[in-house]
Image (cartoon, rainbow, N blue to C red; front, side, top):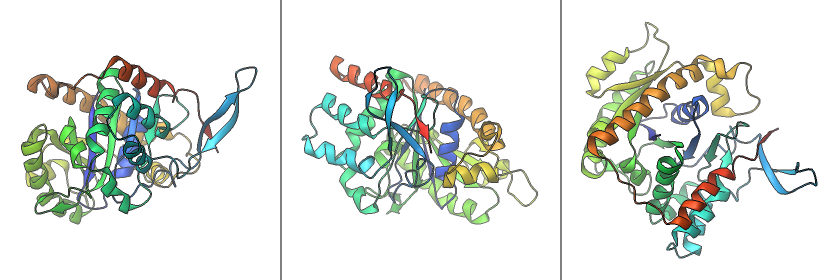
Length: 319
């Protein structure tokens, strides 16, 4: 189990990488789209995914399938929080439940779609503590890995912007991955100040500078930086590498019909290979630091958390 956040210093494939890690995971996983510039999952990867809607027929079969609409997502979680006064934990978990959406038809992977307008980011400032706690409970109590798409980082005064970045989530993450494209010199160059800013931020407010690692994207060609070179230049560890498979990446970025043998693509095979050591590293850090004794929820809240995931395991329909 792990809470892993992905961010970048430029437009370096964060959403594609996060989706790849989630779809490549061999364990139950939640992909939380927390890019404050606005989410793209609903209009791309999730646009063909429908979930059961309404009562079952007499034989227990689904009669209706619901497409993902604008009434689902992070922005509506914020609305529900303020509508309820934001005080009751169990009630808030119940309000989060409808906003989890199937990521595929496996019943083991689901997503929290992001904002539909960047102007909605300000509404999350008061919501973050409660939402982070829900994600921690999903991770710790239900043994569901949480992968966060944090998007492109925005700094203000050398620190993550209080509105335009998901800083509270980064603070509580076991691992924060800065995504770097090895074929793009600008990606490496822009990462240098971001590494310093994130290490400082995580030292002051998070789980320590060692929570930060680099996730590289590339195919080991001569035109690319080598991961070891990037590690030395940025003075941060490369904790994972993904092969940049154009066909698989295009599907993860744009959605539509999945390509044949998607699960056997170099990108998703790499994601499977990466997730296991990331999970082990997260658990190691928790043990070493006796990290983040997550405040347990009430019995009522824990029952609602279990229901939150069980509600997603009713199947999904593509198309």
